[in-house]
Length: 148
Length: 148
Image 1 (cartoon, each protein chain N blue to C red):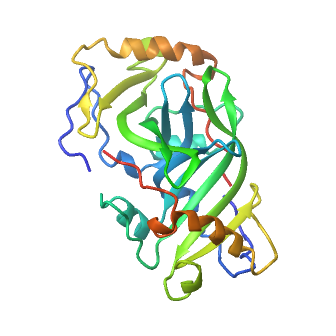
Image 2: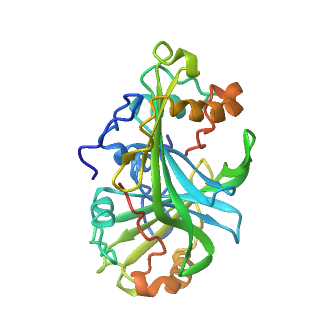
Image 3: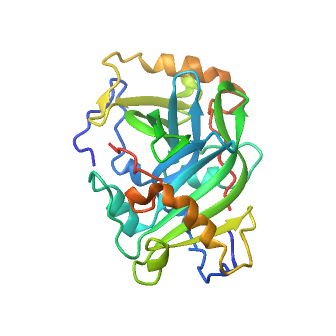
């Protein structure tokens, strides 16, 4: 497990133990050949599994995406599975602190060593610009999976 | 969370709290238009995250697959995400009890109500027949994801 991970330039800390969080969903991005698992901290899991039509994420919720390059499974060629690890990224819900970016603080760490994505304190602006496409869903792309 | 789930015909019980297990990987099956998240119980997680070249799954390990139909994300059309829930399936490692099926007991429950896949005690034979394609990997298709 990654240790001593550096905070991002916008001062968001990597949540230790993130890979032990529970699942909210998964997705495949056909535009950049990656697959991702979306996890949540306890607050996010409680909100995401409440079976509401549109999830309301309370302050303190953190959503995480673990992203891998796609690869083909040797033993089942019709399956696309997880190849090289690309990055971990999180959205931290704080409607006061991050009021100018939809109530979310954005952070990304690259590679298995989890190096901060950028040294630019404004790097997260790019995240928010992209997430505006999900403005009708509280700036969250992920729709929590239906769970048994 | 599903309650009072019926055991399968081959007498495998649904592990309560399965959806709270940690992640081993995810995959997309292009032959049947589904996406799946692979989880493990504590024994499986310890084995699957040991960074060995080929995972040795000890007795007591349980691997679970949660399977959903693919759908397109409204807010990002190039993303394929989780639609309707299809089924949950598990592999239970017991090299003595399941010696004739590669050391694994197979079970599947369908839909959000988690109804046993079949009333036929031999239904799991079909699972094993298919998993023979992964005989060089202890009959497990999943290769644990590289985790930071």
